[in-house]
Length: 67
Image: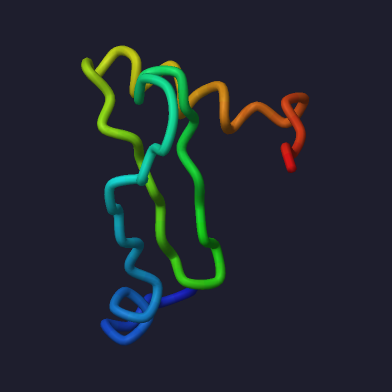
């Protein structure tokens, strides 16, 4: 049985911060992650439903990566 220590929980805490959007409405943009730093950047979506849709779409494996 694996025991998670308090150190493990602190070490892997993810931070969420607003994503800077330079063009177009926030609702059209997807979230971005900086996985090495445990940071999730979210645009300032107008509703929770749009945020849920963008997060769900971003997690789909068939979506791939954009450059």
